[in-house]
Structures are given as C-alpha cells and as structure tokens.
Amino acid sequence: MKTIVHKADTRGFANHGWLKSHHTFSFSSYQNPERMNFGKLRVLNDDVVQPKMGFGTHPHQNMEIISIPLKGALSHKDSMGNKRAIEVGEVQVMSAGAGLTHSEFNDSKTEEVNFLQLWIIPEEMGVEPNYEQRKFDTSARKNTLQTVVAPKDKLEGNALPISQQAYIYRTNLDAGNLVSLNIKKPDNGLYIFVTEGGVKISGNTLNKRDAMGVWDTDTVDISASEDAEVVIIEVPMN
Image (cartoon, rainbow, N blue to C red; front, top):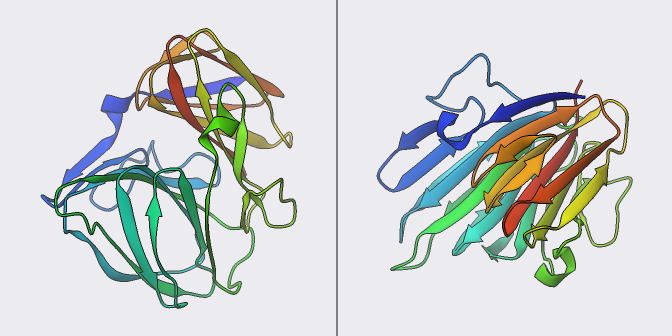
C-alpha cells in the first residue's frame, strides 16, 4: 500500500472577497509542482461564495466537473439550456466534452454557499457535453458507502454518469463505525476527503478537511474516531 496525506492547512488558499477558496491541488494562482493531481483527479476546490455573488459565464472543455454542495444552494445556468439550483444533498455532474459555458451564483441575500468542485480528467476527448444532477438520500449512506458518481458504461444504482473509469462515494459514519472499500481496478487509487469529523485510515488520523490518497492495495478500511462525513474519489492512477 502506498499513501499520501494532505492536511487541511497545507492547501492553497485564495481570498477574492466574494469567494474564499481552498485548493487541494494546483489551481489558478496556487501552483505547487508537488500538488498537481492525484491520478486522474485534477482539481478539488473547497469554495465559499458570499450572498448575492457568484461565477460569471465561463467556458470548460474536456473535463468531468462534479459539484457537491455542503451548505446553501447554488444556482446554475449553462449553454445546454439547463437552469437549476443545486442544493445540499444533491450532486451535479457536467461532462464538458467538446465545450460548454456555464455560470454559478448564490441567490441568497444572507447565507453563504459552501461547495466542493472536483475536476476529473476524462477518458475520451471531444464527447457531446452532458449535464445531470440528482438528490441522494442521506440516510442511505449512514455507516455505509453510497455511490453518487460512476463510469457512464458501468452505472450503479442511481449514480450519475461521467466519462472516466472513476467513482465517487459518500458516507456518514457514527463514531466507532467502519466501512471497507474494495478498489474496483488494480490501477485505481482512492482519494479520501473528510468534510466533517474525524477518521482513521491505516494508522493515520484525519480531521475536518484533511485528505489521504491510497493506492497499490485492494481494500481500504475507514473507521470513524468521531461522527464523520467523508467523500471518497476512486480514480485511475495512470
């Protein structure tokens, strides 16, 4: 087993006033040659958007973009005609493919929005852009794994599709509970990001916003040292 630990306070940080963003991997003005990616996971941003502020219309191409709200609601509008709000409990995926534009905005007058945005490098370039979002039952991930994103050719349950052999799981663990995850393919790795609480993995203690990459193994056990919420990204390492 190979591992790497990224503590919360080692992330890049940008304060734009209307936006406060922590960057797990190099992004925008934060450039760290030792933190470029974890396999096909290229971006993991932890963004807080102030009330009545947001991202203006901007383009994306050839990237799988996944947004996971942790607090508040984010309004979305794109060049495919989608115009919806994404809320806590939902997950949004965009396969940018051949190209699209979109905007994201916090419509609330009083409440911040906090969301994770992940970019995964696709296995195919130039595909037709696709957008989907779905609400997932929180109770269905209590002390177990819930698959929220999966490859479009290997969908599980009501998981959202992306153009890569990658999966995203969520779990809410009560203190003292454990989940075991069997890695799908030998050349895949897991990137485990703690959104709340604390867990232990292979002798490592992770607290809120800490993360750990694990690869060259078949199974990973995640045990909760306190009540915890965890997002797990399984991606090809090459």
